[in-house]
Image (cartoon, rainbow, N blue to C red; front, side, top):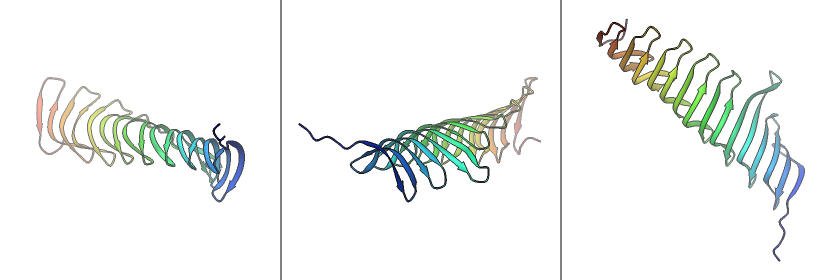
Length: 191
């Protein structure tokens, strides 16, 4: 006969807060809920004392006296890692890949102002993808610091479109295609 592992569901107090859930061999392991001193809550899977696996993390805002952000998804070694959904205080919603607590990899974000971005992220920044503005314009290309920057195409609501280089959010050098079939070479931005 093998030895039976200790597996209890109890409540424990720690310097960082309170935990209720599975303990194995004296460590937080299995399923459980942590209530941190800052009032954040994590409910999910644990491995060797760390959030690991699937779970839900709610972020508390002391000034607003309520939970204002929620992450639902995968964790690894205590941080968001893998696939997850984050609902932000400003009502933006991101669904996609996380790495080391950052939006990194492929993901889609629905912004509260009506804009949508679907593409590649790195360290919470949009790098390349499709951005639809709330006014209906579409951009497909590279971004830097939240602005269209590098090679891309933008399709305007009036039927025109531009393809070429963008700098600081604006067309810089390329071709502007108009609804009457004309193609204009742009060398120094669209005026």
